[in-house]
Length: 101
Image (tube, rainbow, N blue to C red; front, top):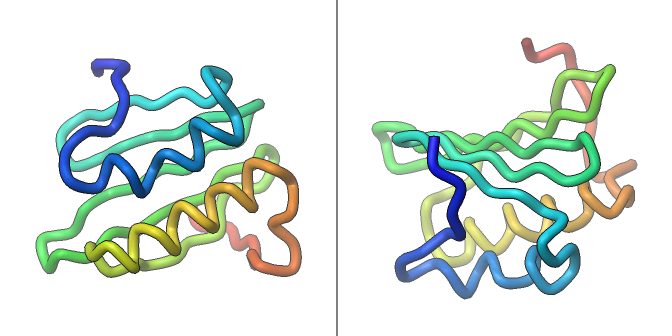
């Protein structure tokens, strides 16, 4: 799994994560899965065959709040907005945590 910054046409969408958390937020990718981590919180994003993306937000000891996003500029912007709220601790009441193991 390579550690690298998101690239391509949506790179600007992810810029707020770097602005907010700097090099403390880590990114890794393996095939259709990507992980962002910040202070033991993780956003695990997987692209589906239907062109949508599913994000699991993991904050131990809870497993995750799962949301589906469209693989569009607007869908990715919404996902990044949710990631910013999640990593900054402003996730409740935006997120309903479920046992989604």
